Length: 309
Image (cartoon, rainbow, N blue to C red; front, side, top):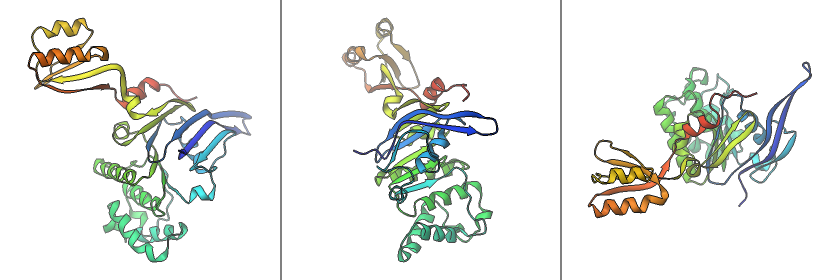
């Protein structure tokens, strides 16, 4: 299976002619995004996210490394025809009305004229802007501009969406609408590569994450693998027999008693013994699953207060 996005040992250096010094932006960056995935691209400001996205889009050239987008080199027209791009900051013509803006971009994207009106109606509805179709872009709020930007990125029905902070400027309801839209697009088979600082939202919708700091990839992998805590399981039960406290503690387990039940965290090697003891004692074992970390904890462990060079 050909990756939708593939970077191998990509290096980018910004050269300042006046200062006569080089500033490394990316250093041997390698990662893949598979077709049909929602992949998060995470890192602090200045870590190299925008540079990486610009290289993938063909806006910048790398000094070193291999880049393939949908099997083509960045900037290849055959790739561009299949990409929808949502930048963090839009530069739309402020005098245009919402519908007129989408009609203009539909022509740029080569959408057949007979399909344009119906498509625009559908997209305006999907981003909750139908009632603002005749309002000039200059009077749109930041969140409305963000949503019309997502609509224009979908005009050509792209197979790959690249989104830089797609929920920037949106209120909680607006962010949920964008999350739902992303999940709907994923269900249709689209690949989505998005940059975001909202880690809790990323954790809800993404299959994979790439974390970058100071121009280097510090962690990349499937979300379920990133969030799994090695060799620990969580067991939820309705109650705990009196003699079980000492047994679990001797096995190195942790016991918590939230309202309405008991939470046990224990090494995977002991999960069967604990569950069987609970069953024999007549307890109701409600669930047993690998212990999960949070994306925020992982991010702070990898990046923390480190500032990019």
